[in-house]
Length: 559
Length: 36
Image 1 (cartoon, rainbow over the protein chains, first blue to last red):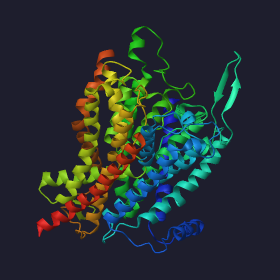
Image 2 (image 1 turned 180 degrees about the vertical axis):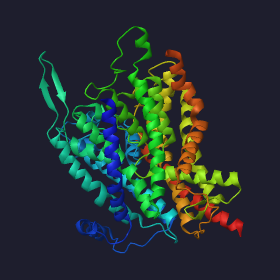
Image 3 (image 1 turned 180 degrees about the horizontal axis):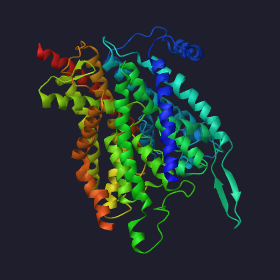
Image 4 (image 1 turned 45 degrees about the vertical axis):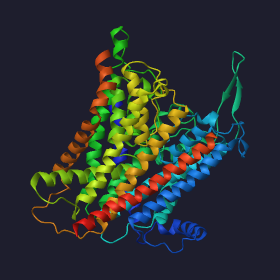
């Protein structure tokens, strides 16, 4: 039964990839197509209001500059709203203004598509903040990621001086992709019993006479963009394990597919832009193979039960159900965990702190690799970065100038790729080490021993990968954690985006190199294998030592 | 006071990110100059 559930979800994903990938190609190809008719009038109105009647094509530098500046405006407005939310409208539950360091962390978290939450939504945010800050950021950060992917694809597949117009791509991503799907899925979620209301928190009297607060609100609309935009920030503190956010196995499957569909379909869009569909399938296959490998480990580890409890003679037929919802079971919990950390969404339907050691290693490893589907847009870009790295290594091995899609890869591109590649482990490992030196960091650990290392490592890995899921064992709502993870999220998001847009800007100017018999092909199964190897080897070389100190040591200790 | 510190931290972080754009541009353009 478990296998059937998992196979059906993967089958649905495979069915979505082509139509959605083709649709996204039409949206961003800048050629007249059928998507213009229903949406172009809305876009024209937005362009008119924003003074963007003439939308010139941009160099990579201009594209990156406007991307960051737009994000700064959203951050400024959102930060202000969080600081004064107690005085703003739609505060039916009397929520107070947010503490400044927590507001700093929250605003960066949502602008960078991380959605790391050091607060509980139901008690920390007003309805206005949930909609005007959280949901708005969920749309804009996802759109930012998609525009980066499209600009990067244009850079490596076309010839010219520009990589598109940021404002046009950004508007199209929201109006033609995120908004329509979100509206449809919100209605579906309401039909599946997810609340959508402006009513205040319900105060119920329990059988024992106690008063219980039952939080409700505009949950369904947040739930859809939370997954579609690979955001992950829950309306409730318990995120998608809460019955109002994810009431049934049906909503669970829909949530999995929603967070998976855009990152997976963008590989098809890439193939369409490259005019060689095989290129897209190579990237998709590499991601899927890596995903399945990690998922098998996750499922096996959790289904075998907790080793400590097993030695006590407890029945482990249901697997390790600690921290998991009975309505989801092992299959849907492990699939959710693997998808949420591979697609770097960060939504959770079970407690990651209570995963078995090897089950906990999988989400960590997927966030460390940050390219197995990845977040909307950035996952594809990261995988293409590894593809260029693979071509470069192969070129060195055979003594040829490396080429990717007919363009020569030179030192300047490799320098930028190296910066993006090294920044990721740097912003994970250095803050983790610093946290262990300082009492401010060590004091937050709730679980001694090797698992405590995993808790700290998970927090910074989740921040750097812009995932946002929490290990939840860490006491992380303190100025130290709010500020340190805030800075890590910023660096994790923008260093790689800017460096890789630079690579796109450099490649777009290059002449095509005609394909010869000696050209190293990047559209066959051999390259798929090489790409997987490069991802795993680079990841293992960088992160294996720290994984050995955390989840691997814990596994060896308790097995 | 903490609010002002956070505003400065946000401003400073984004300023460095904007500078990073120009640094990356120098890597691309600078290397081209060296090749010439």
